[in-house]
Image (cartoon, rainbow, N blue to C red; front, side):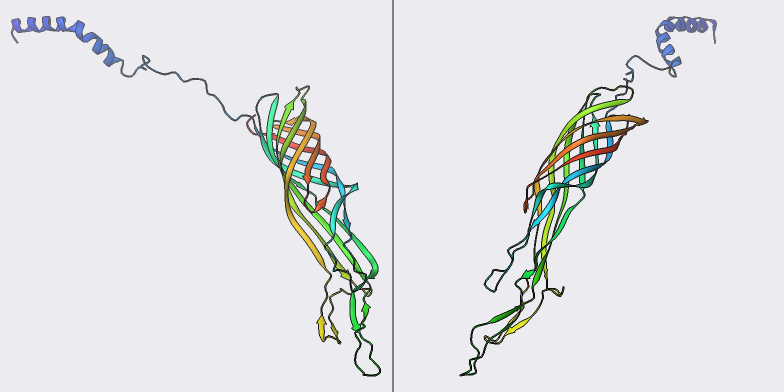
Length: 297
């Protein structure tokens, strides 16, 4: 290279250096973090941290069930018996219920949950008639001495029956509940609450008849006058499925026993409404104990 060309090259490089400097700087900084338009991550927000599941057992005082005797035939002209009718009596019986559900703690003062309850079935049995119910087992006719023909003046033999009656009610409910927690002292949180929902279940009644010899009244006899065979059967039954409005009132307290876990002890008044086919309202007073597990606490 001639001296003249060398000088021109140096001058050209010197003139271009200020223009190239920013580009060279950026090229040198390719591996460095670029924060000109970088979005910094925001604090993470957690949703659903108040979810819980629960299970409870309760000891209850249930109304006693009674069963009313159907009309009982006393002679051949009496109508056939009906199915017996169940009704709630004035007494009460010890029962139990069990429930499962889940809910959400909205804040330290308010929570809500949905639970399903199973209740111990109520049942009863009784007898009626005391062996005096008219249940024909044979028919006979006197003979006319002059003609030797049967006279239509029947005499019936009776098995002297007793009615054996039963009644049973199975009940369930699904309730949406809301609670107000009244503050926490030393790990104990008292609360009050109320709930409403749907009660449903099944009821049945039956009456079977036995003769004085304890044999079932399922017999056949022939009427010689009319030449007709009879097979009377007095056994009767009724059943049905019911649905009704249910509501509950609660009060109690929760105790922190482990991480995420609370022991819940309380009182509940539960009203399952009118039961079709059963006279009276089904309600119970319960002392309940259960566990609440806070999923994300």
